[in-house]
Length: 153
Image 1 (cartoon, helix red, strand yellow):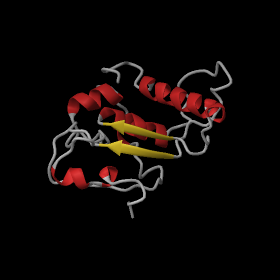
Image 2: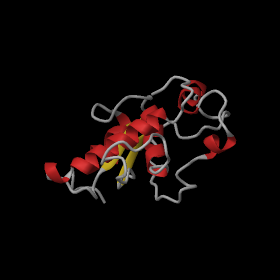
Image 3: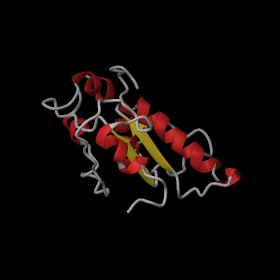
Image 4: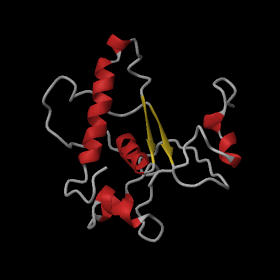
């Protein structure tokens, strides 16, 4: 993730490129190009949310056959994301690194709700930031991502 990089879109540009590359290469790998998702943890969760809500934002010029492809993921997982940029509740270092130290009001207000995307929120009583999923303890250990496939409701 950029550290107060003057072009705060640079992480989004990387995510767009990755999604377009995977989507453009999917058929050759036996992957359905309409079943490709994104996952992000912490600041990466913010970047994943940007890809979900701003997949067509112009960040770089088109240079090859991948660039015109759709960068919107078909699904996404945001795990302990830095999702709010409200200075009263967000981590200030992450806020500065993700949207710069002098963001515009529109940069602060971008969100999944504004894009009218469906969402699901899971809150846990214990567990620290960055604990991961595989080795989670307490109620995080019983979360939906720890359940075997097919057993989720």
